[in-house]
Length: 213
Image (cartoon, helix red, strand yellow):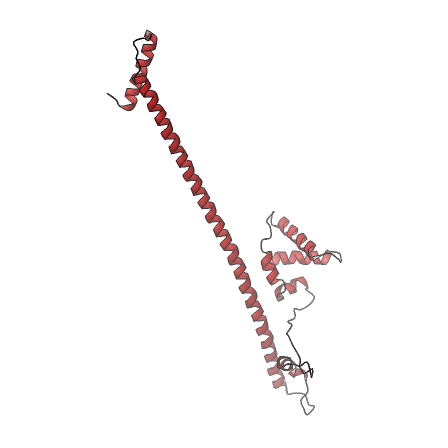
């Protein structure tokens, strides 16, 4: 995933303006396939989940630090910020007396603000990981099902081949018994000496093969 993200970043930097996202993705996949010796990029669904994560933002825009956007809302009638926005901005507001807050309070508010941001990041990461696990599990399940189907198909082919060979063996045995019966039942009184000698030899072979006395 990191390699693909790096290749996509290269494409983003060198592509002309107006190039569509599909063309950029196709170019990055082509570069990935070349680097990996014709191995295709199989995790586009995972990329769709991770593409907006902070880790990939750092690769795509190395000159900018990743930022976390927190959803804020205000009272539609008064424009008053919500409690979360107020808590995050407390360290930037002067006290009622017009004097800056003591450094200890600032540090505590900054720590609380960072904790809120860290909690948001953690929730986003947990959600992304859960989606990735579901995608990988689905891919793995489909792979196992395909292998099981292939094994079942091979077993069925082997059984069909064995049944075919058994049928041919029985057919040859029936034909051989029929031919042996004709030779053993042949009336040799009207045969020439050469013909009689031939069929007598064949009869001896049949007797030796079948164990007849």
